[in-house]
Amino acid sequence: MLRIPHNVQLRAASQGPSALKWIDALPDTIALLCDQWQLSVGAALEGGTESLVLPAIQSDGVPAILKIGMPNVCNTANEAYVLQLAAGHGYAALYAQAETHNAILVEQLGSQLAQAQLPVSEQIDVICETLNTAWMPLSDSHGLMTGAEKTDWLANFILQTWSELGEPCTKQTVELARDFCAERKAAHATATCVLVHGDAHEHNLLAANGGGYKFVDPDGLYAEKACDLAVPMRGWAAELLAGDTVQLGIERCQRLADLTEVDPTAIWQWGFMERVSTGLVLLQIGLIDEGRQYLAVADIFAHANTP
Image 1 (cartoon, helix red, strand yellow):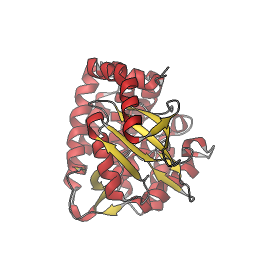
Image 2 (spheres, helix red, strand yellow; image 1 turned 180 degrees about the vertical axis):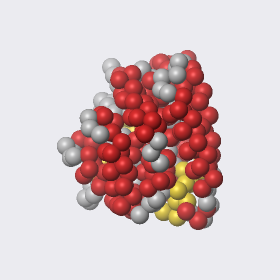
Image 3 (cartoon, helix red, strand yellow; image 1 turned 135 degrees about the vertical axis):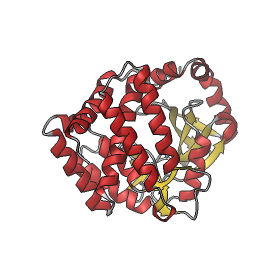
Image 4 (cartoon, one colour; image 1 turned 60 degrees about the vertical axis):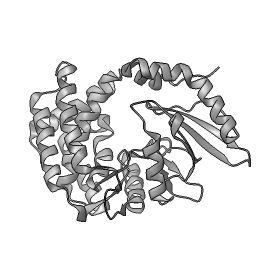
């Protein structure tokens, strides 16, 4: 019997009929891919919301990870493209791709950084160290979403979803997030753009076989580095709420800036935009307590009017 992780079920329910149909078809899809790629697979892994992830063993005995993306939510073709561009530098290696089934086979890595029992400050150190390795300049966007396009998407998503969910944070917070979107769009410049992961959090950073860490599950964008630093900036909301939220936020932002030599104002703005949008997504899919924490921090930041 295939057991679907709870958070994947929640996300599928929030997406409607196509995602629920995808869940029903998963046993057949897995069987087909196992036959096509000569795999044996284990039980589904916990942690994600947008795909089914299973450990696998290839016919030559090499371990791998089979990932099958949820339709209209997780585009594994884009992920495969990003992994090809990265060529293993800071990212898991790509073994195979099946666009028809929205599936990829990638290098199996070790445990998540989130499982390492490290203080948040040390997790941030590891994320920044790996990002400094993974960021690579590109001559152009290579067809990836640009940072400017991402800001447009965020601005529209935040306003629409905030309204649909009954305005779960202050109007001031939404207006500030949209103002920051406009500022980061205006700052977009080819000279400062690199290949960014787009979701560089502690659950997407896994221990590498030769030491250090590597990223998995990239969104892949052509954007300024602060776009990636938004993710550790937005995370660990409970820690920020447990003390002087504004001061702790400022200290985290400065730590990220010091570790990467990126403008702290850009980090703060991207982090705020992502904090609001992620909080709304969490509410959308039913992770209510976590979503409220994200938005509570955003409201505090907005009220303090901190740049």
